[in-house]
Length: 68
View 1: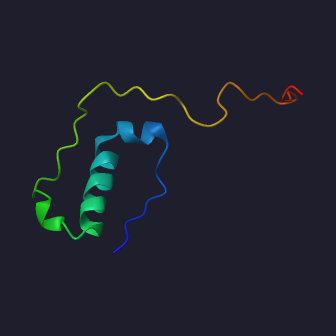
View 2: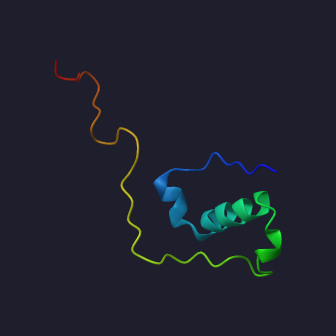
């Protein structure tokens, strides 16, 4: 079995449904779907989750180049 998603931006995982999709998809791929509760896996954060934005963000600006 294979579970795959193109989701993955840190902000995606702020969404409870995305976290549940990932956890339950992994359990399914491992053949452990019997461990998935009927109401779905609990996916509450156990600690604060405040990820930085990924990618270039404010670092890249058109016309700017790396130092040599």
